[in-house]
Amino acid sequence: MSLPAEIESVGSACAHVLATADPLAKLMAARAVARAWRLGCLTHRFDAAMPDRPARPDAPQLLPPNQMPKRGRIGSDRARAAMIHALAHIEFVAIDLAFDLIGRFGAEFPRAFVDDWVRVGAEEAMHFAMLDRRLQQMGSRYGDLPAHDGLWQAASETAHDAMARLAIVPMVLEARALDITPATIQRFEGAGDLRTARILQRIMTDEIRHVSAGTTWFGYATSRAGLAPENHYQILVKRHFRGALKPPFNDSARRQAGLTLEFYSALAQ
Image (cartoon, rainbow, N blue to C red):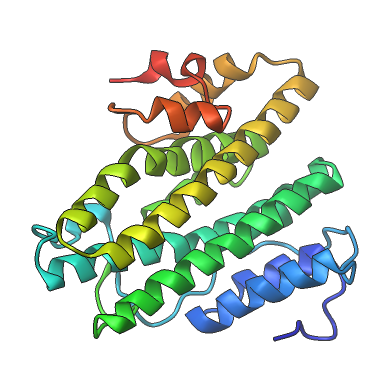
């Protein structure tokens, strides 16, 4: 899939991804943007406004997090499919989060910022594709179950501030995935679903790099502003994150990503 001929800048390419509702078309658009950027076919311009909300398909039905049905124990095929569906939705929204970050804030950063987050967006698309394929192997598909809209609420909350977006999305939400994914992998292995466990292991390896991109560019932004990164992170999390940072933390994976204890230990509850 190639981008429409009228798309010449990376900003307009990001807006194109967010304006694409169909899941398959969105992941193909993400891959097309990554390829076009890598080949030098897009200019380093940010000449398109990002939408307040990305386009969404008719399914899944989006519910508030507290209205989501319980998934039950992961031992049953139905519960495993429900868990995979929830993870696929996270990866689907993560495609938009990556490209919104570029299109909304890219002008504030060097060209390497686009390099990093285009790669992240393409990898989120790959993760979604792997999980949706796994659902189809189990007789289901993305959209068959409801999903929650909490991730985009975080994007809306931080739409005005690049440092807030980096602090909340990669450095809180994606870092939380580093905490819980090892146990999720063990649960799938315990249920005999080694195929899904391998997919999740691949995703976690990539997510360490995604959190690292967040901490790297957060460090760049705070340094440029003359701010202490750990202290300003704590201020932004208290201001913009709805909830608490709860242990246990995967300190090893977080440290690999540059998210050391100095950032989050004072926030832990």
